[in-house]
Amino acid sequence: MTARRTTRSRSPKRLSRAERRETRAQAAQARAQEKKAERARRRAERLARLPAWMRDRARVMIVLLSLIAITLYAVMVPLHAAEYGSPVAFTMLLAAPAVAAPLVSLRHPNLAILLFTGAALLMALMVPRDVSPQLPWPWSVPMLLAFAVAVIAVTFQHGWRTGLVMYAAATAAGFSAALMLPGFASGNSLIVTTCVVGGVYLVTVLIMGRLRVGVELTRERALTAQEQARRELVEERTRIARELHDVVAHGMSLIQVQASTARYRVPDLAPDAAAEFDDIAASARSALTEMRRILGVLRTEDHAAELAPQRGIDDIPALIETTRRAGADVALSTAVAGEISPATQIAAYRIVQEALSNAVRHAPGAAITVSVSTHDDVVALAIRNVPAAAAGPVTPGGHGLRGMTERAALLGGSVEAGRDPDGGWTVSATLPRHPSDPAQEGPA
Image 1 (cartoon, helix red, strand yellow):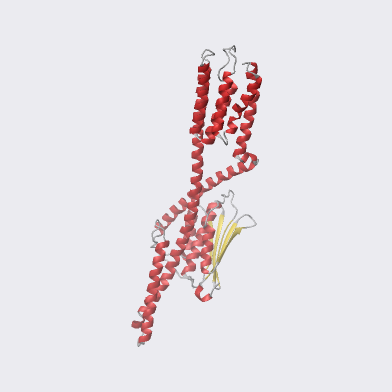
Image 2 (cartoon, helix red, strand yellow):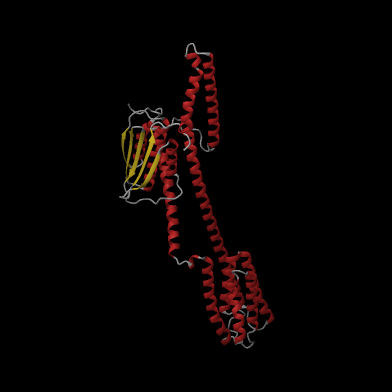
């Protein structure tokens, strides 16, 4: 005897079009998620290849600024001593805070501003009056580079406002030196320095804003992925709850109808028995009302009630045909006999559907075999795909296997999934033909 059909016939043309659209949308979404996961994986691999100290941003900044400070100090002291005629001891003493200001700014930006501003002003005032007017003053080239590095470091670490304070304070120190020594040299060097470092400051602010936007986008993407995973899990459990409601509601409705009509169908029914049947009917109606209330709480707002009948084992061939039309190579073998409960049929259909979706997503182009059979009191399912020529990456965070396992566990069955020795993938499920009542089995 063939399995009892649990669904009414619908328009094959309308069904196939809807399923084709759904399959294409799911495939496009899966490809987009796989591309994002691949880019994230490549970034993680590049970072993993770096030494441990280079992955620490603070250490990288300290090492880089230390190298720049040593280089500038080694150039600035001989240049000011030889070309500008500044005292060597005072030059060595004042050049140190000027080049070390970017390092100090990592922890103490205000102190760094004071150190650089004071050093720049005093070094400009220490230059003898008979120095060549062709030399840049009050900013030498090493001091200009130290000024630019200090502005960049302060802006990156503490924001554009602190960076602007650093730029304005050091510029004011240069103008102050020019005002204190009005006939020393022309102001062309100071104007060039102010314009160059001002441009460096603006570029730094733009880059810092772009990096901040990138960090915020990465954080939002992570939050969106977490919310999507949570939503998928909630939707899967909600769908299971609706399907169980439909199955149990059908049985409860039959109990209520049979109990309500017992006094009319059974002649010479005793009054006590009739009252008992009325109580059973009232209890069934109350249970149905409670189930509908619970389902209303579980159902999400963007999922309307499914008015169509639930699909079962008899609908698996149509599902296979839809998957074939989407371009997959799927073979189906069935050996089903005897009656199967509606709950088991729904679970079997959903497990096959989810396993096919995973196979098409993660092993595109691979041949897939689906087997549905009955043995004694169980229904056995097996969905296997051979290794794909270009397998898609398995993106974490999905709930397909979890959903299949939960469906089977609710009925007292089991689901096993894993990679085959040849590189393929197999999902096998065992479901009871007629699930027993947990209340009769006692506590687990």
